[in-house]
Length: 195
Length: 195
Image (cartoon, rainbow over all chains, first blue to last red; front, top):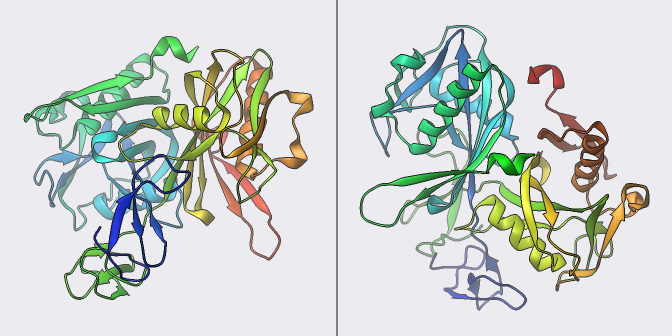
């Protein structure tokens, strides 16, 4: 951010009075431009013992597999956003069930909110942002070709819950470890704290 | 938004190619300026049979009671944000337990993420944004002087869970009804869908 989106004057970075964080502030009109994390909403569309995955037609991670998900828009709820993304990316209609995971990705300033959903039919197909969409049993999931660590963790928790016979809601962080290599650590809200 | 925050040229509102929503787009440099909902994170600090409330020293809703909560910042997780707000607004230290509620407030483009926390001690006190902080039993909660509908719903679910002997995680929407009056409807993700 270089210019004030309100008046067009140059902005500077400083901590406003009464604030604790540096902000982009306009010296001309006084506007403070906050930058905050974004919410990514998505769905695990389930059909019998399978889940629906999409192969990405866009960067980042072109050609890799993911669950339908995208940025929450203004004026919509997380469930409306998850329904919209599932329709846009996978051409699929679902009945949303419960919240499944809330993952923090602080290294990219994102909060992932994923729901479980029942596919209403198998009349699905790739949207503009997908190369193909397909149903996968657990044993056939392309684990080595998933687009993002948060998708792998979401799917592992899903199949773990399904094996246990009880779905629960999982909260945790996916933290990028220091260094050049893309290495991540998953830290779940400790189970002992849950009780 | 009137000017491009990247290059300072005037922006126009249009639907970019391949997009479904109108965006602020810069004709000079091509930047697309997305606007998305913000996450509000907070805590229900519990101590024996009481919860800690703060009386607001700032607008909106100056003088009314609320739970410690505020906008999630970049580079932090929802739990880190909830810990920070609890310290800033109530001078209180908590051990975070589990997620309690995820509420969508589409009329103000906010997603509220509230956790339950155990107060570590009773050495708390008002921060700059609070007039006073105090512990309340359920029967003494100032229900008619709460700042926001989402705070009332969060507290009602909390005490309902506590009575039932089992805490669960609740997802729902708080929708502002049409008309001049401030009237809201709470729509929880239906219990029957949860199974």
